[in-house]
Length: 210
Picture 1: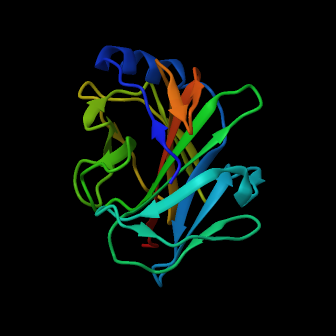
Picture 2: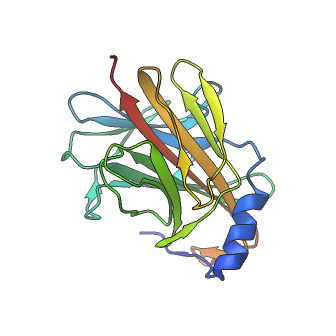
């Protein structure tokens, strides 16, 4: 497996970095899951341009226990077969044309109140509509969290005093929450050092019709 060593930085530096990237628009990776438990990962924007599956590198899918799940690449998506009932995670990376390292961390489901990925939006209660942003086990505050649904409904969430963001779910369909953070510090991947490191986390979940 390719080696990835990420920088450590003080919580205050992390907070500054998270705020600095809040207005930057970029592609992301997100997960969708069907009734059988099978899932697919897509790259790009939920309501916009989709990227081919091979536009990201070193994808890994897993449940909370960390056991990796098989992935099958198709032209416009990565497919994960049915596996367990817990929330699903996927991580991948990409180096852009300016030499910045993008690390994508996706999660489908809001049943679990703990984080597994380095950067993750986590519900404060199972199936709840309030979320906290967690960086390597510590809660941090993002300047904003972007929300979009499969029907094109969009919102920007601002954190409350305790750092959480809350979201109403008035419409059925797929909901996607996204936040991007630029890390203060370098990362080394396969022996190559990157000075510009950006993390993008997504959380997706389905809301049934009422």
